[in-house]
Length: 189
Image (cartoon, rainbow, N blue to C red; front, side, top):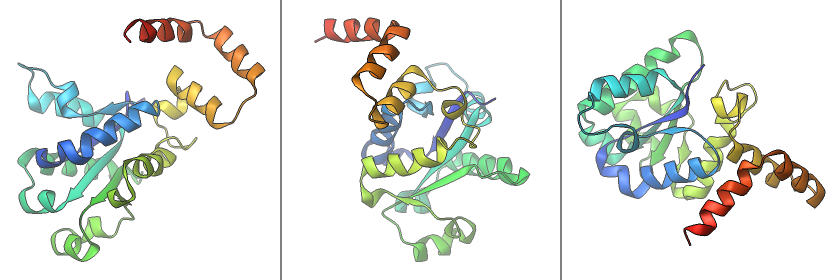
């Protein structure tokens, strides 16, 4: 069973404007997200850590941008190759995100990727994350947050369902760690 819901493959130039905000939004939705700058530490083997992230992620979100098309690094190319290899079993793994590119631009570089319906960053990070989460959290996706949801995910599901106050109270009573988190958060204000 995968450890991560998704691995975000990108070029470093896209990290600040799309990758980090998207990762933060997905984590806020209770998803388990692998992103290089949060999983790789000084002294780690890049190849080994990236291999572990790819092997233990259910989906690969690939940020396809002009920068990706022009200057795709060795690592981003290797990640894309690995994600395509994971799809050889017939299961959808790659979730493309079109970031400031058109289908015509993508066809010139990768007709295979241009064939995929991608989420689009022009819709905003909130909508982008929601679009990706619908796929990742689908009950049949095999994603960790769909099969064994975290406390954050369970709470979010309850909020999204507009549960009654009584239901929320019972949930919190059964999950005392929520109160511990609230107390810790309140103490950091």
